[in-house]
Length: 160
Image 1 (tube, one colour):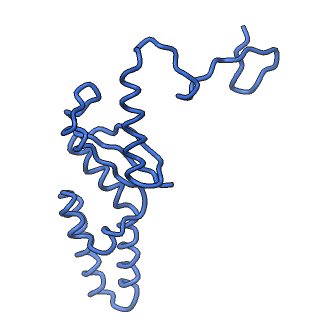
Image 2 (cartoon, rainbow, N blue to C red; image 1 turned 90 degrees about the vertical axis):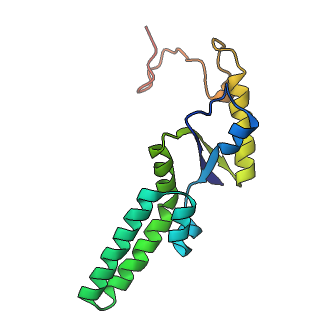
Image 3 (cartoon, one colour; image 1 turned 180 degrees about the vertical axis):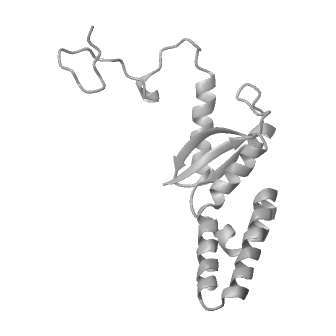
């Protein structure tokens, strides 16, 4: 299963959710990014990650300067390592870039693919908005009633 970070622009809320606003919600898959590995400059520009793009150019220029001054295989190995690290952290950079634009994180969803993540997220988000404010949470949402006992459990002592 993959994990997706659900991001939305600042003006999108559950109360004002329209189809146009729902289309703007972004699902960022956490993990390795093939686009960031194979075509990093195009990937950065396509995702409008301007500061990350400038940082990438500075890092590549520093690697090139190191390769010219040091020589040998070390700078090449370092360049490959940097490319792999960039591909691994590409989704985190994308989330960071969206947060800098005041996008909000609406949740984190685990699913087999993006379509399933969208269905799970909107099903939970829209059903959660319709619930009364003062209602008791159901066990399906992770809430359970505390249990009182004569036995003390470390961290869970609820005796009077």
